[in-house]
Image 1: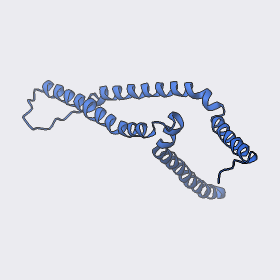
Image 2: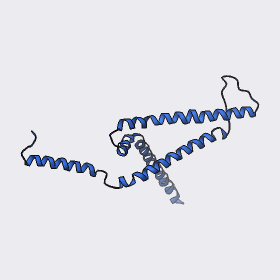
Image 3: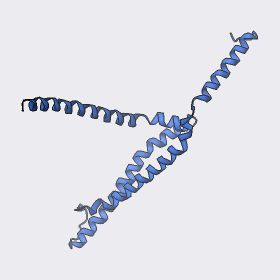
Image 4: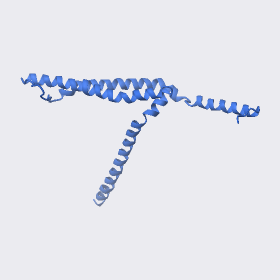
Length: 165
């Protein structure tokens, strides 16, 4: 019984430090996900149309939020609230708020958003499969060959006496 107190004390500190570790890892993952869009775009698509792709990536979030929040969830909520009011025999007055109760209010909106998330997952999976061979290989080979070619050209010009001033 005397070890019980020690185990409780040690166990609580262990849980405390484990919680801090988990939170810091989750925070780091969140920050990497927020601020690594530029790196992901440049690695996957290159730098030729970087600014255009970055702006499309930045515009996707507010456009998607508007579509899913206002057009999907909002309209479906209003429709379900009107159904519930009609079922209770309540007539909505102009300017009166709609109130919906129960899981039916957001059920269809949830299913639509979940389905679109699943479609995004499938598209992401297809992109991973398509680029797997590329990223498994030597993705910097082309750049090393360019540096070697430039170095060879510079050494050739030095040996021939045509070194730039």
